[in-house]
Length: 274
Ligand SMILES: [Fe+2]
Ligand SMILES: [Fe+2]
Image (tube, rainbow, N blue to C red; front, side, top):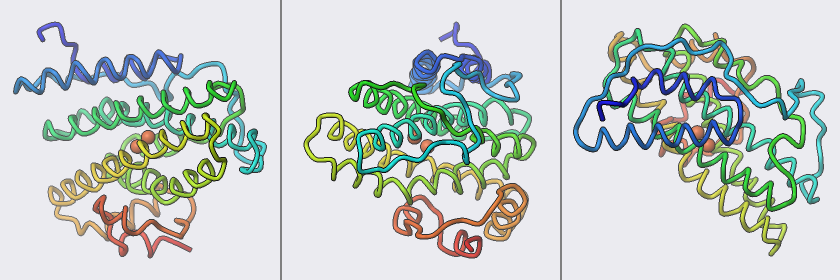
């Protein structure tokens, strides 16, 4: 345990690893070390780090403006590969987002449970990326085979100096959006029938759907914690921060049941929709 490097330095090492499979392997290894230390009752050092402005990423996929990313029909194998590729890209970005929140805000004192939660979330995102990258490989494709969305790190840059803004926009808006759209994606792969790649994708997305609820819940938990610390009304603070940092309105339909399970009441998100 004495050879454990401070958590913020683990985060920086993941953020500066460019190869996707190496990034997720390192992320899972560090999460395991952290969790093993925590299981003994230890409170390991958080330390400080210098997270990069943008995380290191592989040379492929090429990153394009979302308007230039070609759209494909979901009813075709190419369309399903494109959906999986987009999901893999989101999951890889999520690995970096969770390690970034650990490394970037160490000047704000937070309870150790804050770090436990984001380490677990980062570990789960790493598993999600691996599961979806495996599905792509079953289909004869791979992560990097198609272009991907260039704007994914925007929310992190916009909230790099505002922890409450980060919590509001990343877990409570973007990851909550994942709860809204994942059941529809699972349906696309169910309709593809007994094809082994489609069956594998359904199983992977069910794992993602179950685990993403925690990430939204961690966001809500720590957002409410900070509102308490600063004597802010959580709903008003959420509306202010999302309007400041998130570009555009939230899109219904919302998965009200899963959002409620994650600690997001309707009066948080409905007023921000069109
Ligand atoms: Fe995920
Ligand atoms: Fe997530």
